[in-house]
Structure formats: structure tokens, C-alpha cells
Image 1 (tube, helix red, strand yellow):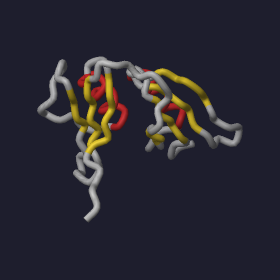
Image 2: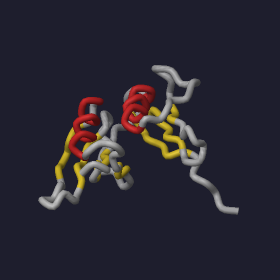
Image 3: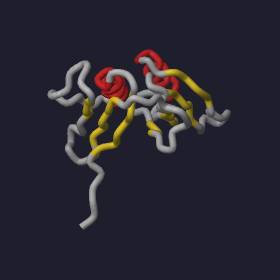
Image 4: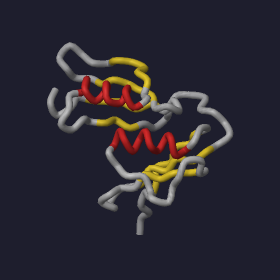
Amino acid sequence: MNPTIRHITFDCTGDPYELATFWSEVLGRPLSDDDKPGDPEALIEDPAGTGPGLLFVRVPEAKATKNRLHFDLKPTGRTRAEEVARALSLGARQLADHTRPDGKGWVTLADPEGNEFCIERGDLD
């Protein structure tokens, strides 16, 4: 029997609930009903119950280097530019634009704690 991935965990120095709220809005996934602002951890659940949850846990040390693992997000029902604008409006920062003249490529963003993620071409690009 092989294990399954239950959670993908993000360390954060701020309020885990606030960072989880950012990702909940980006991904359109609900926060656990058990979590509240100021809690030491917060969980975004998979509504279908088939994939891992995203767990946000308070730690004392700040992020020091580039992530070794990150999300590549493909917009659904939006262009890449629309998804980037939406993420920025939610509190992300743009780090780099790797969009090519032919439309391929990605935009690298950082969440409010500095964790990198990429927005690829969308359904409407």
C-alpha cells in the first residue's frame, strides 16, 4: 500500500488564516470551518475530497530562499493577463513575466508571504 498526499504545507510567519484566505480566493476552495483568524494553522480543503488539502502553519523563521516547489496555475475561463490581474488584486506581487511573443510562457508571482507561483496560459489565451 502506497501513501497518499494528505496536505501540502506552507510555512508562514504571519497569520496562517490570512494567507489561507488569499489562497482560498485564488483557487476558489473553501477554508475549513474549524479555522479562525489568529489560529496557529489554517486548512483549505479539497471540496471533492480527492486531492490534498493546503495547510498553512505559523513558523518563527522567515522564508530565506527561492521555493523548491511551487504551483503552476492554468486559468479557467480567463486569460493569463486577467488571472494575473486578479491575483495581484488579492495581494500577490509580480516577480517576472516570461510570456513569449507567441503567447506561450508564464508570469511568476509571489503570495503575501513571498511563496512563488506561476500563471500559465489560460483557456481564453
